[in-house]
Length: 289
Image (cartoon, rainbow, N blue to C red):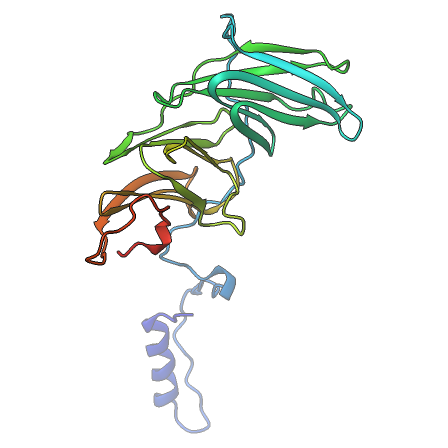
């Protein structure tokens, strides 16, 4: 607490000029109001206040439209004694995915999801089909009733978020997942190795589709979640060059929403002077940077 210099000077003058035993009265002064000392919890700080890091809950951003679903898209629902129903969506020559809350499934030409009885209509069921070459994504919803009858609806196409990352033999396209999160699709014309660098299970929210030569499609899912950092990585070789693509989502203090970054880098790899078997699979963790 700071005391004004005038009060200190008057107090010292009164003490020094008073004869022994005869205290000299101090001049009458208007009472001085001093601010209370702030408690340690109330000490002012120059640092800006940090916004609370809210947990992002999945929100349905899908708008159904009146257009018909693709003619070659079919849905089959079979009763399952253990869990209730097994719903399977099929479309030839497409990558098919099903999502319902935290449950996700994807596969070549078909995908299946188990739904418990009594929970048929408790959460939205979203389907997607992806063309391997163009990355064009068709999206819609499935309405399932308590009797196990399913009806397909078409929805608006996903929105591409930001720039498309294209380098050497890969093309990566980030887009909204319709549930408050982000999906990154990567087409690679080389043998692919991919994984989740932030999770204990490297296959968490990562799906890879390869053809006979190992080339194909990688899907990274970044579901709506709380604060933190999630990093996905894929790698491949282009001649004697190793290429790494990193998709990273960050949600830092003070940010209202997560930020997504998709970047790539490549470097010539050391090799022995004798012929090398280029058909061997490539692990991005073995690259030298």
